[in-house]
Length: 95
Image (cartoon, rainbow, N blue to C red; front, side, top):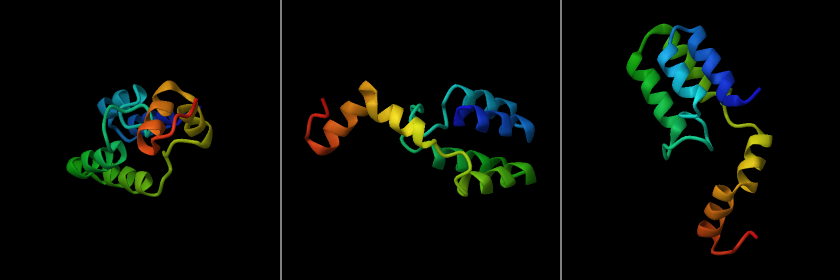
């Protein structure tokens, strides 16, 4: 199962269905998100909600429970977006 879906299910399970739907679309995912720092935004959103279930989820996020898997990381590196990003950061073409 993709980590975005694992996060989505966990958010729904603790009563945060709107955030769960966003997570299912990759909004909080390391490589799928339009955000620069999706994990920090997720932590901030959970902190702002402030309920005990939200704060418990925040702790799980901070512990890395929902970080992208190695397979997801490797898929991103092989993707056009990953290749472009690596090229821009290193100045070396990955092709």
